[in-house]
Length: 285
Image (cartoon, rainbow, N blue to C red; front, side):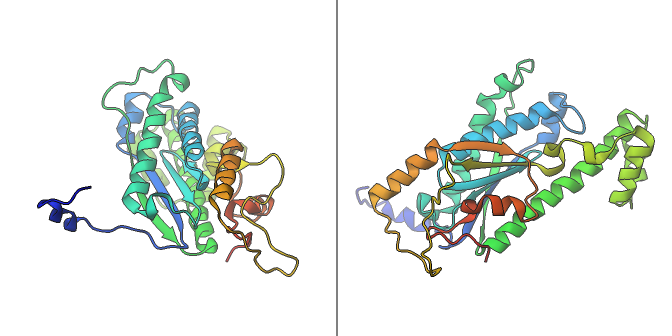
């Protein structure tokens, strides 16, 4: 951009570069989705088609941004995890958050008619906001994802109990809310089973655990480098050719939509490459 007498205005722009060697989570949330659920009469406590639409939009976002290693979603939110080494948009928070949020919003609206063909999408259209949070260690990133999945379970158990009391039990929303005050998980499980014959453990995993979106490779290849037999990091020069090959490999990878337990270790043990460093370090710090 050519210099001019007006160029000084750029001095008012504030830098928002995120620190290096941090895992970046961009979390998007639906704006005013309580009203949207009422407008389109989404089923309570869960509308499977609405969740499928969220997952479809998330899948395309993961496909578009190769530096996203995993996404986790529940209800009207999704968390997209960017690899700690990403240099996308020079790690500028505003660019990352707005790019993911707008891409998700576009996919959500564009795919609406395919997933909800009997519901005409009208103004005001659904929109999502986004924010960036940095996590300096895999252990803390794992704890963040555990927090979101635990939150999914807590909210779903409450909503499942609440809406059964209203829709099947004949209670008003105020009465159901008052009846559930002070209850713990075992109380809600008992209400569901004794009053409505529902075994909460048999509810769909997608409702109880949320959704994980990640890449699966044809072979169990280490896409982020390797370790030598001494456990030391093997030099992995990031030439333009190598980076391009890695990008194409990720673009060709199969995108998986699943509902696993990510609080325990089994998922991470089975997919060590997801949180591996560029030098092949696949353990949690």
